[in-house]
Amino acid sequence: MIRWLVMTVLLLLGAQELMAGKKIVVDLSKQEAYAYEDGRLLFSGWISTGRPGRRTPTGHFRVLEKDIDHVSSKYPEPNGGAEMHYMLRLTNYGVAMHLGYVPNYPASHGCIRLENGFAQKMYYWADVGTPVVIRGSAPRRVDRPISRNAPRVATRRSGSSRSAGSYVGNDPLKLLSSVPGKRASVQKKTNSAEKKKKRKKKRLAEEKKKPMTPLEMLRG
Image (spheres, rainbow, N blue to C red):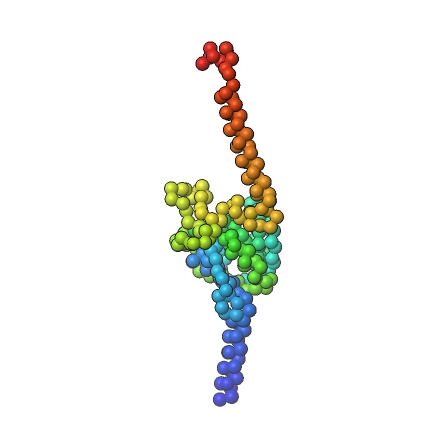
């Protein structure tokens, strides 16, 4: 009887230990990630994992490092340089969770891209050492309902091609503008492009108003 009670207590203590603290669960099949604390789901979000040939590994991991403005030393190969904001490193060989473009299909080199808004929330919530469980099998694509929260919508616009990358939400301009220190530079580039377009339009209008020379009249 005493032995049975001791075993029961140990099992209960073990169960409580497993339920305690923070844990991230990544479901490759649903292309979603979940944040749990003390066994309770706090929040979740859409993700895009490794494409065919670059599959995201499954198993048990931990957050090894956090870097809000990380720059990849590996991708694009061979010299790196890709920006991976709100990065949570999971392995020493290039797999991490970070802010990125999230279409309705696995599209990364093996990392777990998090949608805009979800990446920031996960970064500030998770700690170094937080357990991460990656499970399931990545599908070719996932069907997601239209969301009332516009930044979360990642469905393809009708009549557009996948190669064009024309998806609602999570576009590169919005992603960069959400990163600390990037908003001003993005706005500056946008304003510069608009000014160039206006100058070109004005120049063309002036050329049309300019009277033709006798030589131009003969050519016409």
